[in-house]
Length: 257
Image (cartoon, rainbow, N blue to C red; front, side, top):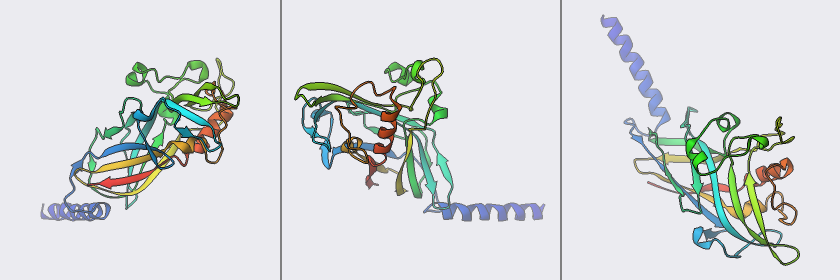
């Protein structure tokens, strides 16, 4: 009996040591950090109060207005300093139009130091095949003829075209699809992972995520709205360009405790 007690004590001490390596404190609390998604255009703050005015200029000199912006982030993941990966399997529809830009995790995580916090822009293919009643209710679906699932982003507005006239654009990101119809094919994945880097999570941590909207039209492809403005969902070439440009959109802002 004494041997069993000593064995259990040793195992407990080992687990405690591992936990101390993973997190910054021997007493680990369970917390719900908050993400705040802030938006800018090359450093100038953007909110829904700036919508519907021609106050933005793309990299190639095109004047645009934004009328609607909402996008999906998922698989919010925390990686400890020891390499342990904690995937919350949570998602959030960031709706800038309605100023719904804050998300407090529904699940708790251990407080402490994390080597990386990341999320997926859009949905990976497995999750994209699921049914989300809340996304259905706000018409975020993609038609079955275009592969089904859900949008990754809807960015809508107007631009001044080459004829100096106002023209609408629908910069909608989805899973890239070819052969639209009953048997669509998918040339490559167009969701992507955003790595925010190391973050310390405390009892009331707020994590600011910055999104530079100008990057969608800038890097590496200098977007020409006269070429790509509408009907972009069935255009796999345009979707892959969006995927490439999206890599530089998001970055870590202030982290407050």
